[in-house]
Image (cartoon, rainbow, N blue to C red; front, side):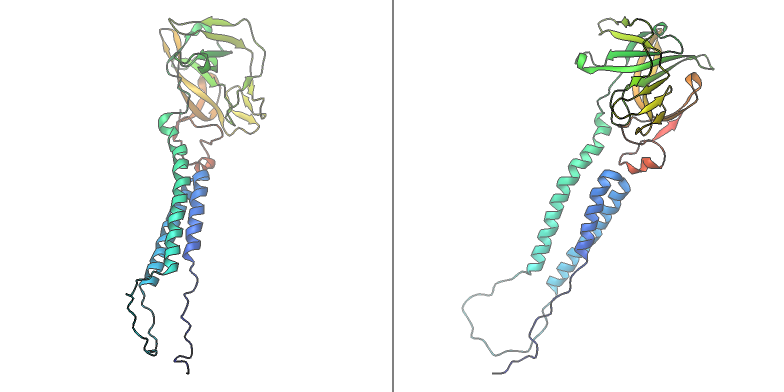
Length: 307
């Protein structure tokens, strides 16, 4: 018996480019979580667009009726009921998209939490209203290594160090202090003043508070022994891997005592002492740029103002 058709092989759809675009979008999204919020947005848009096109193609392919073929010889009817069939390609495509979504969510959600939550819960440096003692304990023009307990409820484990310099008075007659945090802005290692101690240490203890230790030091610069970062007397980076100037503290004077305030980040310091102009920003983690073009490479912006 001869064949009814010259070619009875069904037409197979050509390969689709939408899965490739979807994979590229997911890759850009994951890379954007690390280097740039713009790359993250672009990756998300690409993944959504190509994912929708992929699903749309699979849906249309499944809904398109099969091409008509010449009627073959009648087949004897069977008693078995007809069963609905599903296209295997559609099932595999949907399963791939679903699995990719689960994997993307498993990677994205913790990463977003790691990036965003510190902006709301803090970074572990509280430093609120710590009394460092009378301003007369800080000789003008000289740094003092100041160690204090940040949280008395925790105790010695919260002891911190700051380098405090009394700059005298500003042009409008207000007291000026440079209070530099003792952590390198490369990876957070403790820095050291480059100079010898100058005199004996002092102690000051407010009512019911752990004592504050004050050690004057002859230091014109600071250095990090871990990776060779160097800073000048104002905290500006002069050599090594640090990405910005040393962080500083806000301060206030209450009843003649120096009160330590919030920690903030510094882009650079122009000038010296009481006349210095400080590029002040919200506190950022070590290794994060706060100014220049490089700041756009980090997911969380650090807006700031010059003061």
